[in-house]
Each structure stands twice: as structure tokens, then as C-alpha cells.
Length: 293
Image (cartoon, rainbow, N blue to C red; front, side):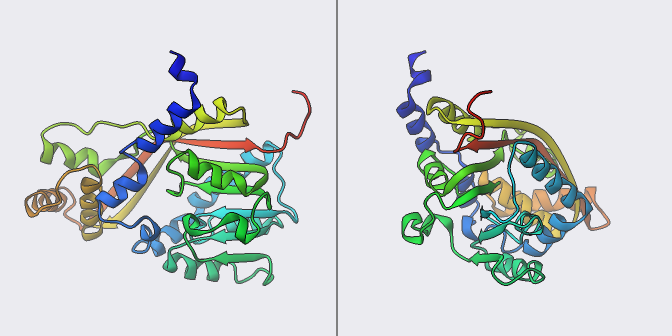
């Protein structure tokens, strides 16, 4: 039980964890910095459709309810994508530095911020992992550092690098468990002969280390669901990447099993994909707003 309260043990356990988002991407043959290159356009459309805007508004509303302000304050958006949060931050008056390594997403981000004054949003088209925080002058430079569903966080050292940039608040979101993906649930038993089993994710390490290290923070776990329709070929590519990421060979036999299932189940050629899961949102207070309470 004493190990439960040992920071070093938890830091090592997270660092040594073999099943991180990044390792799963690499198993699937996907470079994390380029993970969204192929689906940049569809991701952008989903981010700014009615459902996507509602989801963004809910998160920003939660932040504002916790005392975060945006008017004329510096914000660092790490993994900004096409601006799903950069744009509403800027609409609220923030001066945003948007870090994004996917060049297709950067091009879409440029389009989405075209209506703002030139100096309001600065794009940094580099992986955050390669940025030297002190050399950039980013230490304690931002009232809010925002990291939403970005694989840049994979151990406590990477969290510390993000926290180093924050002056008042740091927001981190990540899955609170394996995403429930309808195609995985449907095709996994056909290939492996058993149902797909959910796995724990890194959120538990993050929350426990924040607790052990004495940080003040609020956390929220919600369940969210998204349904999309994609062409069969795109669905097949997605399921093969998912199988690889979970250690299942993406060989010709498994590809044929998946392709036959999609053709038989979705004869129209449009595949309905349902994704759901629990997601954790954590707001870390680097500067206490109130002395008590």
C-alpha cells in the first residue's frame, strides 16, 4: 500500500507502460505527428459542424465556469488541429499560439483564422516535443495552456514540459478508457474468436501524480458518443489501422475477413461508424485564484 503514495513508482510505471496512445499509433504504422494528415478535411468538417461546435462550447463553458478568462490573454493551444479551439479562443479575445505538426491541418487552420487580425493567432507548425520551452521564451508565458486529446502527453516528464509553459491554468483532456468503436466490436470477434476487451488509459497516472505532487485541480469524466458515415474503403483502412494498433496482424486474410464483412453488412458502400467512450477533462490551477475554499 505504501507504493500507492510513492511518486517515483508512479512516474516509472507510466514511463514503462507499453500500451500508450503513441505506441498504439506506431504499431499501426502511423507517425503520431502525421496521424491526422489523411483525415484532415473530414476532421475539420466534423469539428465545425453543429455537433462539433456544441461539444466545443460545452468545454469552453466548463472552463469559464472554473474562472478561466480569454479576453486579451495569451493562450497556448498544443495540438491545435484545424483550430477547433483556437478559433473560439480567438473569438473570445485571446491571443493564441497554435502548435500543430500536421501540414494539411495547418493549411486548414490558416483558412479558419483568416478573419482575425494578423497578430492575434500565431501558428507554430512543429511538433511540441521538439520545441525547447526556455529557448522560445515560453516558460510561465501563457495564462492558459490547452492540450486536448493530443498524444504529446505520454509520461510525467511530458506533462511537466506542458506545465512549464502555464502561468495560471493548464487544461488536459484524454480518454478515460478504451474508445468503444463499432467496427472493432463487430469485426474483432470474426478475426480473433473473442470479444474485444476494453483497456485502461493514461488518465489514471495523470490524476494520481497530480494528487501526489500537491497540485490543485478540477477533473470531470463524461461519456460521449459520435456517429459518422464513411465510404467502405475508408472504413476498411480505419479498421486495419485499429487492428494493427492492438497487435493483430493486418495481413491479407484479416483484410479479406474485414472487407467481406463490410460488403455484406453495408451493401450501400457507406459504413456507419459509432464511437463512444469516457473522456477525462482536467483543469490544473498553477496560480490559486482564492486563498481559501
